[in-house]
Length: 333
Ligand code: GLY
Image 1 (cartoon, rainbow, N blue to C red):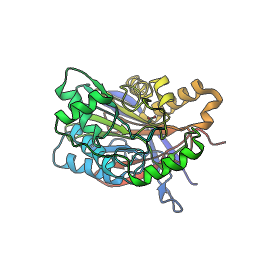
Image 2 (image 1 turned 30 degrees about the horizontal axis):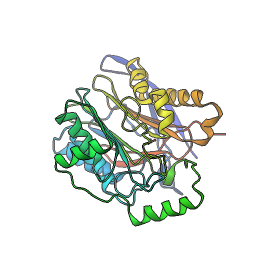
Image 3 (image 1 turned 120 degrees about the vertical axis):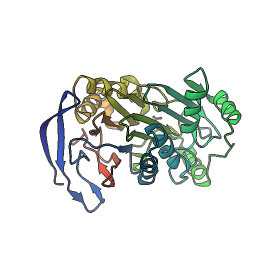
Image 4 (image 1 turned 60 degrees about the vertical axis):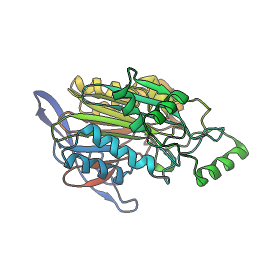
């Protein structure tokens, strides 16, 4: 694997920031770039960045930005693409169920004003990212859960749908034979979708949506709906979002930590690396058994990504391309 990393100083918006550039090289066996940083220049705007290989989702978000849409509309529309994709077994319709066979979804969204809306443990509604936005914009609250969130969805005109597809049901029936609860690192190379975008006005928004850990206990909620853990946006600084083992992200409030580190002058890459180190420090030897990955975007349009184990990847859409990149990672032993 070829990889060269260059460090150079850049001044962005009055802040002294170490910008990390890299030469891109291509691993032809996987068709995934081995670059740890997607930006060949120090800052790119507008931009959409998302966890995992989700080219259709970032393309949709980009289309919104190109039509002068806001970053909030872009992340909502982008996340909806994966929620509707039944082949994706970790987000939206088609997601793997909990131990009782129920698909329950978590999502949250944040806008440039720092407003937040979230739903958790929601059944029968595919587009929970849009439901989270409704919570943010139409209620005096920031989180609705379970039956209350579902009732609110119907009041807002959302359709009731069966989220358990035949293939997810079959997978659950196979799992039930042993009923061993052992989270899989990089499940199908695809997990929670976290998306960050900067629009043409330079404003940042983010969204995060997931069916959570497959075969989780009924009622379990991970990081994806929790402000500061699965997602955090500060339009003065930047945004971050997480994927992987929600319990571990929650314990470090990882996305908030990354944004605060960027506020102190760290690059998105440095901030993601420090957040992963924090997760590992908290977990001790347990880190070998789970994956956590972060992506981050600062106000200047620089991005960063880091994870514990190999094969977390992320999608970046700029005016130049819609490309998947392999994240750098900690566990190289
Ligand atoms: N990161 C998704 C979850 O743990 O639910």
